[in-house]
Structures are given as C-alpha cells and as structure tokens.
Image 1 (cartoon, rainbow, N blue to C red):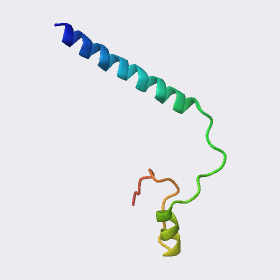
Image 2 (cartoon, helix red, strand yellow; image 1 turned 30 degrees about the vertical axis):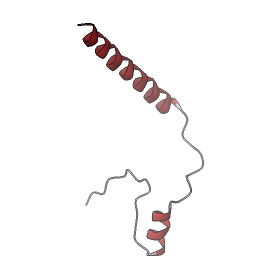
Image 3 (tube, rainbow, N blue to C red; image 1 turned 60 degrees about the horizontal axis):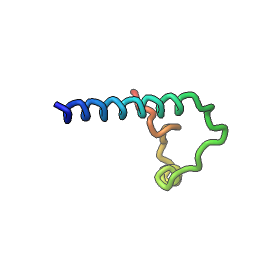
Image 4 (cartoon, helix red, strand yellow; image 1 turned 120 degrees about the vertical axis):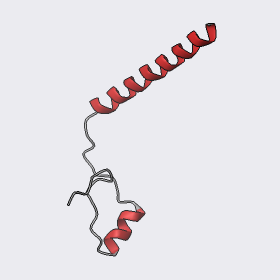
Length: 61
C-alpha cells in the first residue's frame, strides 16, 4: 500500500515538474535571431531541394 502511494506521489511530482517546464518555455519571449542552419539544411539548400522554414512544419498538398 505504501509503495502504491509513493508511486502516485512520484507520478504527480513528475507531472508538476513538466507543467512548470512547459509554462516557462511558453512564457519566454521568442528568439530574435534565427538559429544557424544545420548540416541537413545546408545540404538541402546546396541541392536546391525546398525545405520548410521550421523543422516541425507540416507539409500539406
């Protein structure tokens, strides 16, 4: 019984930590300078292959 309570406490603590991290990430002002291109992005540019602006951008046709 005590182990179950400890497990629930650990899970709830992990959730609370993650919620706090998400809040801090979302409340930060956006970076003004774009990140330097990665090796893959430079390769795509060199091959004149179009790439999305953000790596998470979805491609819809």
